[in-house]
Image (cartoon, rainbow, N blue to C red; front, top):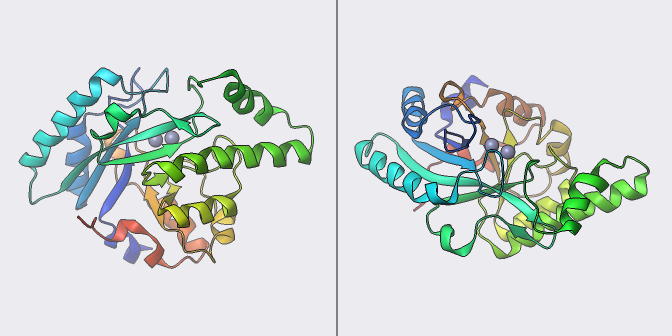
Amino acid sequence: MENLKSRIVADYHTHTIYSRNNHGKGTIRENVEKAVELGLKEIYITDHGPGHYLFGIRKNSILKARKEVDKLKEEFAGIIDIFLGVEANVIGYDGTFDITEEYKDYFDIINLGFHNGVLFKDFYSFFHYHVINNIKISKKVLDYITKKNTQAIIKIIEKENIFTITHPGDKVPVDIEMLASACERTNTALEINSSHRNLTVEQLKKIKGSSVMLTLGSDAHRPQYVGNLEFALRRLEEAKIDSSRVLNFKRRER
Ligand SMILES: [Zn+2]
Ligand SMILES: [Zn+2]
């Protein structure tokens, strides 16, 4: 693992104080400085999308975050590349997410995940996410909702440019094989999250035969956890997945 660890150049998933209500603890600068200390070459700032009513970045702070990143990019030029991303939320089972057209251009990348604490766009979506996912009544219901959850993500990645799906299966179940094949088709990655259990080793084994790309994310909510990818690496190794499938070892093509 030491060998793989030393080859990591990027952390694609970190939060800052732009994730509101004391959810993220550090500033963008602090995350960048930690990444530099670790010798990373790329750091991605990906606070919760505005559809999260507790922790989401405020819409009127997005431009501020963009300017802050642009300033730091100049300061750290030649040392590390800094990207402004976002961890967008699924807010509708019809394939709606919480980054509207007017905000898309502010972000270098958009990650996407399911989260609790999201304001769903309609009752149908609210009911599916919060109620049907929690009726643990039969396999039939579980299969139904698993398919619905998966399709909600697929509908979004089919029309939007999503970089990676964060912690797939963590909040609600997904059909990982169905999702992986849609990700292959749409050039979207799947995340092995170092702070959550998904992707699990079991899920990784299921998608071993596909060619879907993978990302490792620390999901750091404090600067000291930036670049903390060991748990994710461990799962990658346990599932015996070739490192050529992981994006973190190569710098971004531009
Ligand atoms: Zn998340
Ligand atoms: Zn996160």
